[in-house]
Length: 442
Image (cartoon, rainbow, N blue to C red; front, side, top):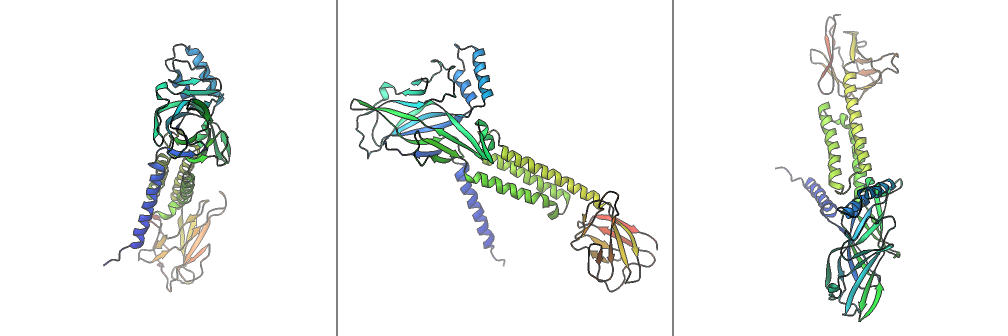
């Protein structure tokens, strides 16, 4: 009865557990939540949705009958030439006033103000396209709460808002990739891209007929998955949300790339035939493409580091294919020149020549005769010419015993092998494929 393979079972369970943790943490998880607890007990629940500025401009100006197509195109063209950073839409989802606060029960919300970035031109935005309740000023956005919903607040409960657009802010995007690469194309350098989003906002409230402006606490959900980060621990004013990719992305890319770089050049040393090498090599390459699809969020259109890794590995595969094909060509140039000293154990040997310029690995090759006498080559390379016109390399396989070197190998026999009158010598590679047959009358 076979013993149960506990070691293998435990190893497989650990691997499965690791995969499940990765999936639960990075694949199945949706938006990432970040909190900033300020002195104010009033909490605003926000969601951040990143978009390309040109997409936002097109959305805000669709079906705008008051703006000529020429003016709109001029603005968009000018913007594209400036290569602006990405922008983010800021939405209000809920307001929360905890039970254990000294906030009066009579609490009303008048407006929320967000600082407006000068880098985002809204000359193309008119009243027809401005969301209801949102007022766009020169330096900020002001969202005015509807009169019938200003004072409907119960402490301890979330005051749900229907995903209200508060404004559009600029995102400071950059990639920490040897040096900081700035601009909205920083996302192309996933997973080394990072972001800073300034959330300069204030809340205007009324309590018992008195109005005041407060800086609320924040709970922010970043709509796109695949971010870590948080607010500045030094409590910067205005608060800045820092976002970066989880270390798993960078570590996974680096480890997989290193494994591929190490494995691919040695595949032809561990497979039995070139077809198996090609199958494994391309399987690993396709595996990296699969990793590309699994780990990169859908909203990343391009990822230069991973693309570079894929193309570099593709080049490695092509180079290895060339090496395998060259090896197949070179080994067929190998030949048995002669069998000398037949019948005399002290002088009997077979001479093999490599006429190519490259060394040929002969580990595991066979030299044998019709009678079944077989010599298996040890770990051995037969050297090539030093240049195209240099002398060829010749190796002697002696029938007797002796110490191997670069040009002499010893069979270790105590009697002769080759016939004095006629014999045939066969040379096969480690896969059992015939390379050369020598047959010459004495």
